[in-house]
Image (tube, rainbow, N blue to C red; front, top):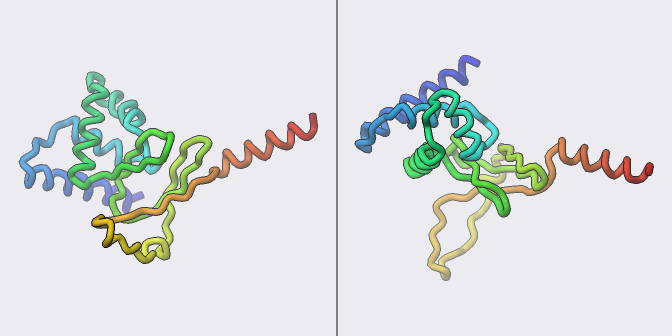
Length: 159
């Protein structure tokens, strides 16, 4: 618990210093939105963050939340994570890491496996493409959705 609090405070201090270096005002909205993001580990959507922030800043607009989240991504304080057919999610963990994505409910979970970060990069010289970073995403069903699907199949067989 103490380590998590220290990590949170360090991230907020780093963000304050980054805003100063970039000449950006450290607004209440920016700080509150970052606090809401780093307080979560479920890869929230902008709407999830908006719901959190509006309890602390009742007059905040959805547009402000979207704009600030985009600023956080641009500054390298957060990352966007997305997969086909789902809303963009935001992640305060900017270190290379990988994800499990439930295709039923949209849940996103971090995967910590050093072998994935050591994958050899493909040869893309002919395409002219430059790879700056990568992440691996596994699609499937989370434990809850898999259990629900098994239960539904079991009920169907009994009927």
